[in-house]
Image (tube, rainbow, N blue to C red; front, side):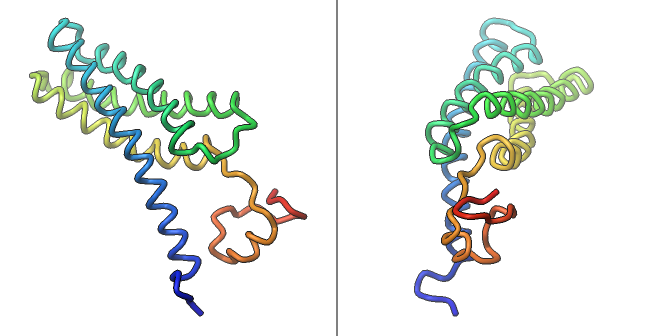
Amino acid sequence: MIGRDGGPLRRRLEQLAREFAKFGTVGGLGLLVDLGLFNLLCHFMDVPVVPGGIIATVVAIGFNYLGFRYFTYRERDKDHKSRELTLFLLFSAIGLVIQSGVLYVATSGFGWDSPLQSNAFKFLGIGIATVFRFWSYRTWVFQKLPVPRDAAQAAGPFLDDPRVVEGDRVT
């Protein structure tokens, strides 16, 4: 029976909504860093669009890592930081390829390289890459801490971690 709190499914959805809001906050600030630096480089310093986009994204990736590690996923496992950083950089690089690919096709393939067009396609590439990043960061990079046995049993089928419960830790 569902109690006053709405049950485990509702708690899980609320938790996911909070996580997505934190991810969005960091990502939104990273977007400002990315687009701001992109425009500074490309439209005020005459750096070509694709290299300017890559430079801006690399700076935003560094900003985002700090935000995700110390704000969005601060309660997640901190014991494997080398692994975490390696995976973060790997998935960020894939996101960079997605973003740069969209920008390259638009500017080099179709010649859409006015300031408005390059910003629109930079933004589109960021949007597509963000979906990939959200999934990969929460699934592979920022690992959840093990759930104690009592909490895992209380969560029942709504446990977000499919690993087997052994003793007081999920393995």
